[in-house]
Each structure stands twice: as C-alpha cells, then as structure tokens.
Image 1 (cartoon, rainbow, N blue to C red):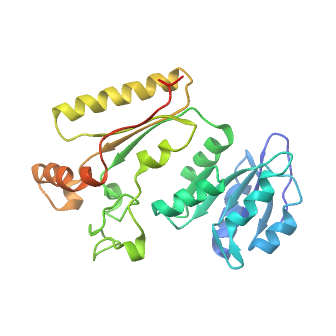
Image 2 (cartoon, rainbow, N blue to C red):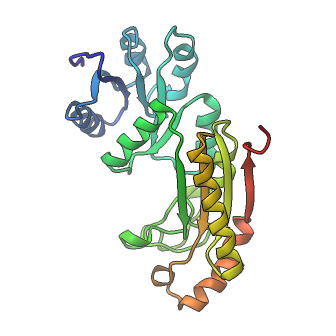
Image 3 (cartoon, rainbow, N blue to C red):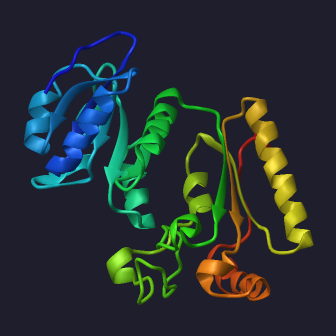
Length: 264
C-alpha cells in the first residue's frame, strides 16, 4: 500500500501481522499531516519485497508469522540512508526490551500505547530529542483503575492480574533506570523515592540536575521516582510507605545509574 510522498513528511513503513491493528496504524498515519505511509506489510516476506523503496521510519512488530521482526534490521542498517526503527509489540518484559535494543531498534512502543503517545515516541526517535523524562513508578496503573504495569512486582495483584504477576505469563518487572542507562544517548539516569523528607530532598536534587543537563544540551536525562498508590494497593498511606520500602526498593534500588555528563 502506497501513499503520497512528500519531502516535508516522514515516510513510514509498517510491518504488522495483525490485520485490524495494521489497518488502524495505516489510518492513523494517513490522518497525521507530518507522516505519510510508504508501505504496509503483514510478514517478513512481504516486507522484504516492499522495502526496496525509500522510507524514514519503520514500525516493526517483533513477532511475525514467518520469523522475528528483528531479522530485518541488519539489511536496513546497511542502507545508504538507514531508517529509524521503532519496535511495536505486546511484550513489555525487561528481556524483550533489552533484546530489541541490542538488535538495533531505536525505540520501543507497546501496542497498548495510545496514538498520541505513539506519535510522541516516533517524533522523539526521529529527532534524537534532548528530553528529560520523569517516570513515576508506583508499580501499577493507578489512574486508570489499577491494571498491571510493566513495573508491577512479581506476586503483586492488579485488576488485569487478579492472581498476582507471574513470571511465566507476564515476564519480569522492568527496571527502567538500569535499562535506559545502557543507552549512550542517556547522559543521566537516577532512581529516587518520594517516601520521606531525606529521600524527597534527594529527589528534588535529581530532578533539578536532569533539567539542568537538558537545558545545557547534554542529551537525554531520566529520573525514576518510586511512589505509592494507597488506593489501588488497598493500604493506608502510612502502610503504603512501609510497603514501598519493604518491597519496591529491594527490587528497584535507589541511586545514580548513569552520569556521563561528569565524564565529559
């Protein structure tokens, strides 16, 4: 499937085996003024036939009927103008994210992500933005009813995991600070906790430093803030603070995971 090309638009290719989702992505891209659809493929074989044309960005499903989506990456990286590659997948476990990054993807977006967030991720991947991300980790999707999040702990119950998160079904919780700290573009990554006065003061310093580095143009900065969700945890506020210290901090240790600005 082709669309009108334009030098002012980002030309996007889609490789996605789910027909309804592929159609939704096509429609969304075609309705966005700064994107144009170059091609849309349902499997590796079709993608290889269609990828002979030029495009700037690839939305790539990691699991396809005839193999892994990442097998396309080596050929794409040998092109004169390699496209940016964003993995679009249902897999939110830490291992899948790390394997995709090691394979060469430039971004990682879950299929449950809203269209607005998807476009934000695509733009960021294309521009290599110097962004500060403040990531509030309370181990659950608290604002939407208490669903399991990528950071939900093993055994922790959620509305979408009533028996608790199980490694066999959902994978391991993702340690975001550690994960992002492995990327060269991440100049600063720290995990803090909003649980008591000393830790809140440390959190303020971390956020300030992240914004200062961003303003200086150093690169991507990231602050992960461990926080509570008494309502969805079914605890009082005081109990929630204790639960965070006893359960979250052992799995999500506090500290600085990347500070490449000091090494410059």
